[in-house]
Amino acid sequence: MSLFFGMLSLVFMYKVAYILTKSKVFSLIPVFTMAFTFSFWSQSTEAEVYTLNSFFLTFTLYNFLMFYQEKKRIYLYVGILFYAISFGNHLSMLFLLPGLVYVIYITDKLIFKDIKVWIFSFVSVVLGASEYLYIWGRFKDYYNENLNAIWKEGEVYEYVKNSKSVYDAFFSYITGGQFKQELFQGFQYNITLFPKIFGGEFFLNTDSFFGYVVVMFLITTLIVFLFYGLFYFKKIVIYAFYIVFVSYSTFI
Image (cartoon, rainbow, N blue to C red; front, side):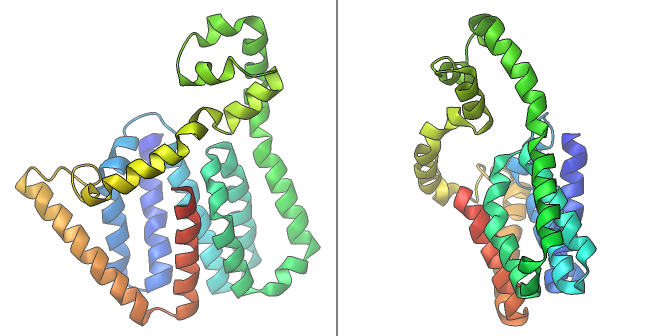
């Protein structure tokens, strides 16, 4: 399923890029860029949450941008529904909210006064949050039954064992409490890693000639794509795109 959602992410990555560029050639650039990154490749070949998260990201963006382009409410409703459900997979999707709100704002400001949209959004959020009831049922039994025997060791156990109650432990667990102390350490690490970002840490290994050619091609096309976007896209769309980028970068 990781591979399946990874491939599906690439499909909607292309669709998102095509909405922005109206160019089949330029729309392939972000697709191949993501497909050949070491991080995306590795997460597509192991059982993890990240390719599913990338699918939710690209599919949500696709529907919101289609709503901007076609002005059809069905795209808005589908986008809201899948965006809310995505919280059950990875809470980092929350940081996309400012960008999505901006897309709605530049499309139709009156939507913020539409009670139907608010009700649908509320129901969608409740539906997405209900996914955690499954975890709660298992978590409560494990926690009360024998904490030491169940968790034994690891980063989750080290954090949960000091919680005041099962409720405190559960809330900390689903919000990634075990990672909070590493947040700023990770930020500092990424800053120091930046000079190597185009090497083996991010793209395919540059030790081989093939890997080096691929990396240089991607860097060149990314630069061309950036300038192409700045000078030829409609300003209102490129602003929306950059705000989405800023929103998600907040989490990074």
